Length: 102
Image (cartoon, rainbow, N blue to C red; front, side, top):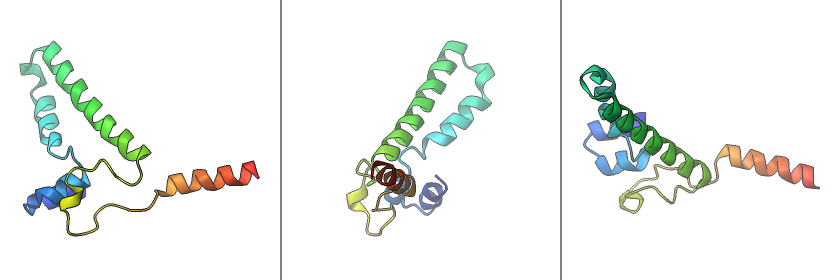
């Protein structure tokens, strides 16, 4: 998300969305938590749970789709910003499974 914010501050929103599609949600969460006493408890809980579910959803999709096929605006990027190969954790699991099966 740090790279997403650096890109957004450079006005490269397409690149920021490719790094993390929910980078824009962080300031909303900070404001929400900062003003939680002024917000009705039920609304606060609902908004916070929605934000948490959104972040977890992106994390899970990126964890199980290592080629980052779900990255929005990926086709608009001119530079390679996302790893094209499988992540190291997946390579490790495949290596361990290959050794235990044989």
